[in-house]
Image (cartoon, rainbow, N blue to C red; front, side, top):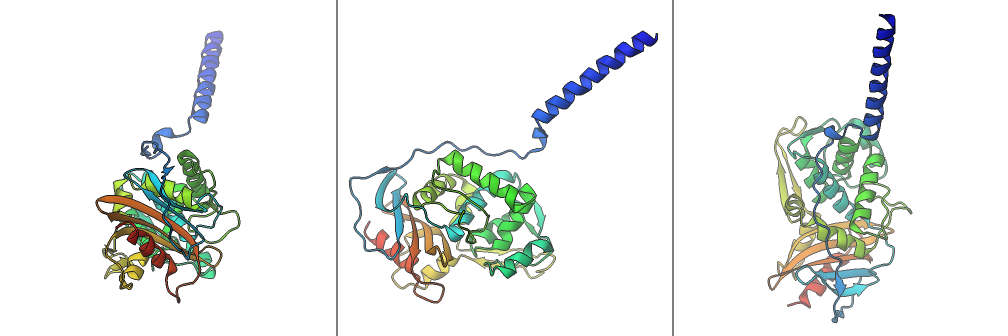
Amino acid sequence: MFKRKGFYSLILMIFIILMYLFVKENPLQQLKPEIVDYPQLEMPEKSEINLDVNLHSSNAILVNLDTNKILLDKGSDEIIYPASLTKIMTVLVAIENIPNLQEKILLPKSIFKNLYEENASVAGFLPNEELTAEDLLYGSMLPSGADASIGLADYIAGSESKFVKLMNEKAKQLGMKNTHFRNATGLHHPDHYTSVKDISILLQYALTNNNFRDIYTAERYSIKSTNLHPEGMTLTSRMFKNLNANENTRGEIIGGKTGYTVQAGLCLASLATINGEEYILVTVGANGDSRTEQFNITDALAVYRQLF
C-alpha cells in the first residue's frame, strides 16, 4: 500500500517537473497579443538618375515606392539623430501589439514628471486620463506627443525600456543596420541613432499597415469625451500645419512626421503622390527651429517639384 503511494507520488513529481520545464520554455505564449507579420520588403535600389537639388538638410533619401528605386541620396547611410521620427517606430510597434485599438488605457501620473522636466513635446493629455489606444496613436503621430508615446509603451510592455527592446527587435527584423533606439519619444541620447535610409525602410514597411497609413496621412483627429476632457479634444498634424502655412504647396504631400532637437536639426519623413506614383522622402539636419522658416518643409517641396 505504502509502496504504491510512493510510486504514484514519484510519478506526480516527475509530471510537475516536466510541466514546469515546458512553461519555462514557453512562458504564457497563449496570453500574448497576436503580432501581425507583414511580408519582408525588398530593399530599394539606386536609380540611374540622382536628382540634383540644393538642400538645407544634411542627409536625405527619396524613394519611388512603385519602382522601388532611390532617386536622391545624400549621405543616406550616415549615422544621424532621428528626433521625433522615432515615433514612426513607436506607433508601428504599438499597432502590431494591440489587437483592439479601442482598448482603454489610463495614463499614470508617474510618466508626466520626466516629460515636463525634459521639455518634451506633448499632445495635451493629463495625468490619470483614460483614452483609447487609437487616441494615443494619433496623439503620438500628429502633435508628436511624448505623453502618448510613453503611455503606449507602458501599457504594452510595462515600461519604456522594455518597449524599446521591441523597437530594436523590429529594427533588426526590417534590416535597419544603422539603427539603435534608447527611448520611444526621440529625446536626444548619444546612443539613440539611425540613418535616413533606415527610416525610409521603416516607413516603406509601416505604410503596408492600413491602420498606420490612416494615422500617418491624417491632418487632424477628434477625441471623444474623456474623464478629464469632457468636451473632447482635436489633434492637429504638425507637418500639415506647417505645410498649409507655405504658399508654395501644391497638395502633393499626403502624409508625414516632423522632428526636431538641437542635435538632429529640423527633420521630416513624408509621403507624396505625384503623377499617380507614391514617393517617400526622409530629410534630417536642416538648420532652424520652431521660430524660423521650416527648412525641412522647404526641402520637401523643392524635391517633389522636381518630379512633376
